[in-house]
Length: 147
Length: 444
Image (cartoon, each protein chain N blue to C red):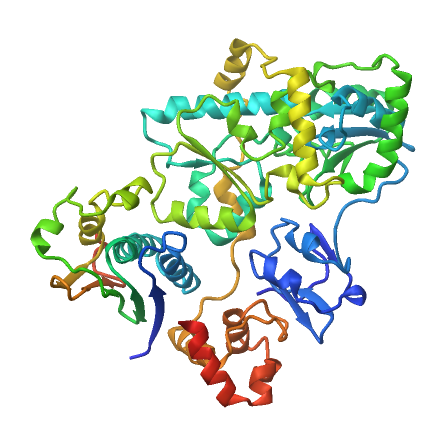
């Protein structure tokens, strides 16, 4: 089945460019005329995952794959990793440092938002081994998921 | 993609002057420009009239599609619509002297925009106040004042058209007032009327007539501040020297009396005197685009109102200004020291107009999606994959030698059949080793 993959490098603590990969993903999906509601959900998730990688993650990569039936966003980083995934999923739980919070990030809503807006969220992480967040969005689902 | 053209509503291309430097390609926010055969400039896509290419072209190969400044007032009644940006061109000169000078140049009526800006600001704040608790408006609302911003939204962020504040723009209020109070008087004199928008950018003014009404005895033209400036400057000097009384003013809206309006010429000036709790001002094309992307991603929902301007520093950064934007800004600051800030219309009277629906546009901003939407046919997955593959071969420098603004746009042009693979100097030279080696460094 035909598919397109785009990769964007992410740099740790680069708040100046943070968000640009998601902006490009969003722009690409718009040229492909995907459903605007779907693009919005993807953009929100992609942005949250990208910010997580920039704030906590060490360097990493955002990979977007567009296929006939689905869009997959995968964000991999080489950062500190997550010790307790269940705890990290709690709304408002955050380990972001002062610098990130001063810039308005680190409200502890990243992972919960991703969970809400993606059709599927897979998190793989261990302390010191980085994090991989894989989100799947289905195209033309029988009924649109309303967050 | 529309067929290549040399002129839009907003800009004109003069290929014979083009040096092929590719500067215009880079600044166009809709990537609408291509250079063919080294110097044949053309448009292949939607122009939103921001004027960025005019500012970028050192060869003068791109000019604004404005009306020439000649014969003002000859055989017609000339009405000047003056934005505060015009005052900012003259240091130590008060707006009334500028208006006087305009009359020396042949304008019969000089309409100052300050009263309409104030009405707009009031109506905008009132709309926000009333909808704040109702939560009906999509937050943040976006200022409708800069037409290039609204067209940029229609082209690139159509979903955000719903965020554009549904209040008539100051220039629309101004045009309506002219239509309703001034035109009947002029018509009685028997001369045709010409409405001159004196603009800092290549954007056009628009007169909205109610549907079904007879055509107006009126022509609208847009002229650039820079083209009017040499003659106006002499007239201003004369007007100041003679210090003659203002004399001929007939309507309250023909004078400027507060500093509020002059603030609107610069970035942040629109929101500075509006009473809104959470607002932000952003200027510059790149910055505006970046903020729109973020708003589209659902950020800034705690901001009520965004003032966006595609020109850096606001309207005084427009490409058709005569003086540098920082000088103009300094002139405005001086003007405000003298005039002070303040309102000239009583709150109650604007409130009455608001309740009568006088600020509500007949046409929803959503209608713009029809006019300015991206018309390129959507890419198929196979085409998108082909573009990705081609991108892997391209150098990624964005040199512009192919005539497209950057490699991704070139790749898309090739796949859409609008350019040849060999238009890329790297691909046609066949220096594959150098390319693949450099390409990897570039990407990381």
